[in-house]
Length: 376
Image 1 (spheres, rainbow, N blue to C red):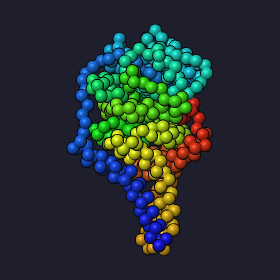
Image 2 (image 1 turned 60 degrees about the vertical axis):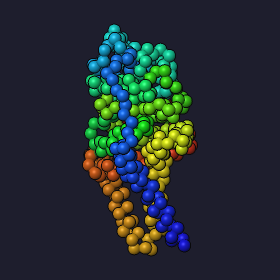
Image 3 (image 1 turned 135 degrees about the horizontal axis):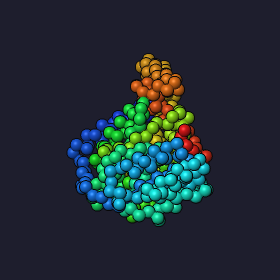
Image 4 (image 1 turned 120 degrees about the horizontal axis):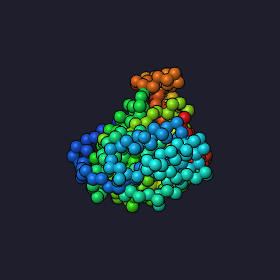
């Protein structure tokens, strides 16, 4: 009957969402106990290039450069490069002032986006390990040594650092993410690295298409796709301020989502069942979360409304409505600057999924700009 079909669809959708956020972390957490692949680390100091793409970062760039110069790494083995393409807010002059301290500046007046800027300076890079780091992310002193010791293992092609956001409910989200990263890492590879702190062997760098929306993600997963390991180094900590405004965070999350849909299309090789655990991890951690959950949540609510003839589903609707009411309350609090606690976590979960729908729309309609607007 129609009612039975609706119930099957309802529980199928609920099951997929539950699997994505609870089932997969539990499974992967259990598997790690019996099937983990260690990384053979050693205290090595290869030549490192710290590459900082900075578009109109005048408020933070001096702090970023001081932070970079203070890192615990042999100075003769460390090259610091800042690419400021398109900047017109004084960033260029600030960076130029650090020339005598060895900081190299590359600038061109036209702005073509972050990836184009990185591709332009890649041939001029000296280090055998390249560390990408965003201008607004401050690296802890020992992070470079922690990152590079993973490259002593010849199977490792890239290393992702541990990004921490100062403050609120994203903190809970990031703790959950870090747990998943540790598990993914122990099984095979992390499922994508963020641009705050990410290292790669220079010989493996392949520029993603210049229209890549989340370049760091595509660079790291291309390595995994070609059989290299991309590992997670929890001791390489980088601190980032949260987006100061919800509007800035909205732009960031929807751009990431648009890039997520784009990368699912590009990285279809990752879903080849012959890839074994990598394919399963990528499908569970990335594809289901980015491409399924945002559509399933409204579907679950809609199907629930169609099942109100059955008393049990009235209770379920009540619970769902309470959940979304809590998200709205969390939103009201977030607008007043209160960004912590369970209400904020509920709000942030809903926020990322709505932003993902917006990102999907931008991706399908081709309206997501490649040159990144500041999340301010």
